[in-house]
Length: 129
Image (cartoon, rainbow, N blue to C red; front, top):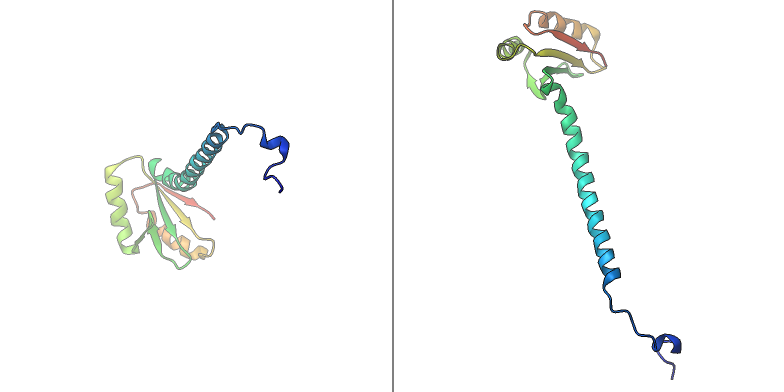
C-alpha cells in the first residue's frame, strides 16, 4: 500500500499556527477597505467639483443645444430668468452670473440671451466652449 504522504513529510509535525490565515484575512480586509475608500472618492470628488462654483459665488446658467436654460441644473423659462436673478442678487452682493453654452448653440442665440441678461443686476461672465 502507498502511504498518503511521502515518508519524510509524514513524520514531520504539522504547523498548527493560524498566522498565515490571519495575514491573508488582514490583507483581504485591507483590500476591501481600500476598495470602499476608492469608491467613495470616485463618487464624492466629482460632486464636490461640481459644487465649487456655487460656493465661490458663481451662479451657473447653462444654455443647451436645444436653446433651453438651466440654472443649477433646473430648467428655467426665459421669462422667469430676470425676476429670479433679481431675487438672488438681493440676498448677496458677491454673486456673479456665468453663462455656459453648448458648442452646438448658434452664436446669434447666445447674443440674444446676452442682450437679455445685460439688464440683470449681477455681473455677467461668458464661458466659451
